[in-house]
Amino acid sequence: MKDIIDLIARMCLSGIFLFEAFTSIKFMGRTKETMQQYGFTWNQDLLLYSTIFALTVGGIFLLIGYRTTFAVFLLLIYWVPVTFTVYSFWNDPSNVRNIHSIIFMKNIAIIGGLLLVWIHDPGKYSIKRLVGMTKLPKEKW
Image (cartoon, rainbow, N blue to C red; front, side):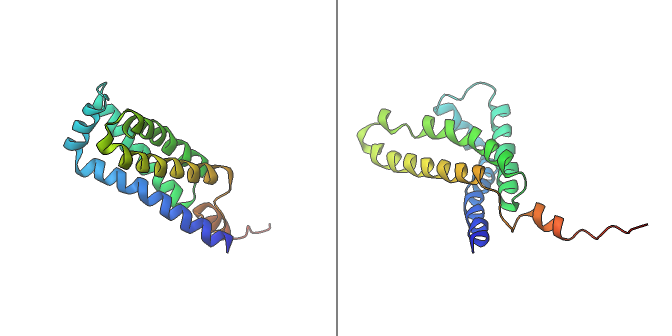
């Protein structure tokens, strides 16, 4: 049962990041405008493509359970700064403070989920374990 829950949790977490990567690609112009609004002006193309790479690779690796520590590291490098920069509700006007505080706390919960994945192995349903189980036995000479 634990392994199935590990798989479902990885699917839920990776879905967020893969969707974020997809929308960053689909709405690249608007994403750059949003980056400009929040002060990410230094080499926007490099930042955006690095973000898309980290979200895609991290999301896929997390989904399939391959090198989950590396995947979580990539995702946290993006998620933590964005959470504290974009959803800094303590600096926001009162009309958006409530919604930004809710989104901020949801992002903190996602960070907690990623940290749990970091300290636990991906479980029985990971690509590494499934490939390892399908290897043919070596012939004895």
